[in-house]
Length: 251
Ligand code: RET
Image 1 (cartoon, rainbow, N blue to C red):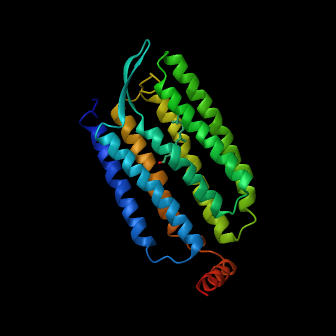
Image 2: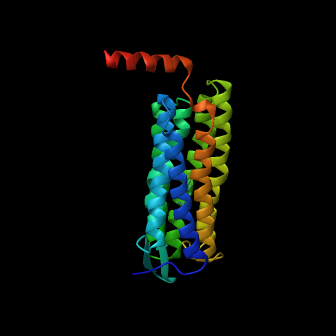
Image 3: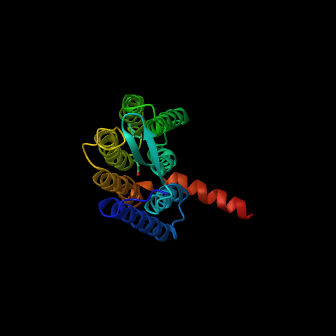
């Protein structure tokens, strides 16, 4: 079985495992007394985001999440498949957090998640492709195409829907959206400069560390900004409705 190379690569994976675990525990602890239903929704989604990542990082750090792929013309590449398993679930959940924050229309949510799944699955296809470097980079281009359309939806459709919300929510949405745009844009760059593309301008150790920093910021950092904000509490109207339903449930 392939194992992570000791040094930067292995260290980054264990730091990722620890960071995601601590993030999960912190959000669980913070969320224990939250009674507002809208806020609970964000806690549930965000806790799963870091919990899935903690498991994925553990799989990578122990070598289970790593396979060797024989690529024509490039030789054997170490591929962390567990990354894509993580991203396949957690990136749609991150988008769901953003979309629920602004009460996005269902069709907007479906479009964002559809594009996201297309982006991650074609990225995985590129990471596993054995036919040669050109094939792998071609998959990267398809994935990046889906990403560009996703960014368009975030910047146009979702932002327009956010503008109808109260100023506090709109402000929080703006901050989180910008965080997502900046951080997420670095993933295709690291992939292309790293070992997956065969260019290997940066080595696997630096690449693994870069992904760990990005993942921790995009998940734990994102969660901290979201869950510590007052804007995630339901509107008074929403709270009154919740309380009315709870009372009705009791009677
Ligand atoms: C891949 C493959 C190459 C092309 C593109 C990619 C985009 C990946 C992204 C990942 C985001 C991950 C996050 C994880 C959180 O922890 C798959 C690298 C466009 C945007 C936010």
